[in-house]
Image (cartoon, rainbow, N blue to C red; front, side, top):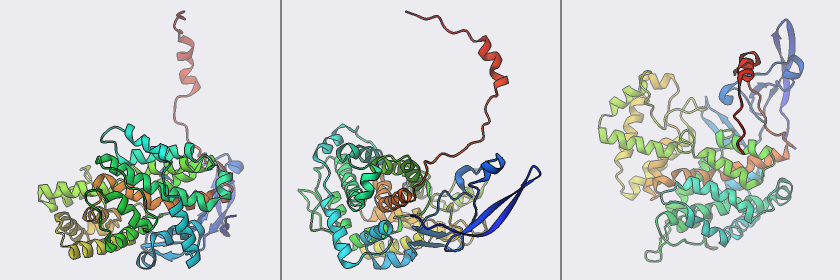
Length: 440
């Protein structure tokens, strides 16, 4: 069962001449919240909070973020420590199980990932029927949802009893689906996963190996992919994770639940932002006037916004962005790659960090600002950027799903404030309505 937050004090709400006492609860890092779960029962009132910017939809032990201080921790461990010291498989285990694996646990988990990496052969034919040019995220979402038909024992009860295999299967097979989708999009034969390769090395090999040009696996590329996957593995109650918890609360099967997360992530305001950053940097490069776009971003009457700047949570430098920026600069320099888009990104950041407009508003580069540049340097095509985000986020989604079902969560069902027509406004319309003659 989920450990409950502690009651620390009380808040008094005065409404319509009545006082209502509401408990104030506190998390382990000092976050406080007014518990309004009894508000409607005691007052007949509900709250409204568009976008849930001020609403906690659950208590969770998985990820902690302090946006004002630029803190991100998985299960209490700083993201900088994880990115520097462990592999993505270790982090996946950490998120799902709560602790970093021992050596024997790592071996067992890696073996499970390996044993469950093959896609059902009948599902390969699905790739033949997607139209040419279909976005890989749409293919990924469809294929993940279809997995429930081929691996039917994924209801909540069955999956909870066999959580190890269930988690390993979705984390491993979705990686295979993503690589197959890419190969299909470029007309090359698929490459099967290999038992002798690590998780990230396997993915790179499935993406880039070819019968006529064998892929040489670069240890540095494998390390970088581990880092990129680690920093994207979870980010508490973001849009896609909230979707996973909401769909999962209906006790939909695990694959349909994950497919909902993939679909949410495909939006340009969520996982699609890294691709949008590259497109915008290319546009600025073609124009040549960086200062002009800085002015446009500051103009409240101009709809233009700098992609990759600012964050819903972080009001200082995104800790993930700092990691990616350094890795990006080092990798391009060591590889002898001169990407003009990196120069444009540096110029934008240098100007913005000295400009009070951005500083006063807490607008700093977020994780998407440099991610696309690094993926480009590694040979990942732009239409696969969001897919990479989805692969990385799989352990986080699975961890939240597991936590949610273990907490016996009620089905998600928000309230609303109705602002439509009233009965008196439509009564005449209904009375005067003449139904069409029945045609036999």
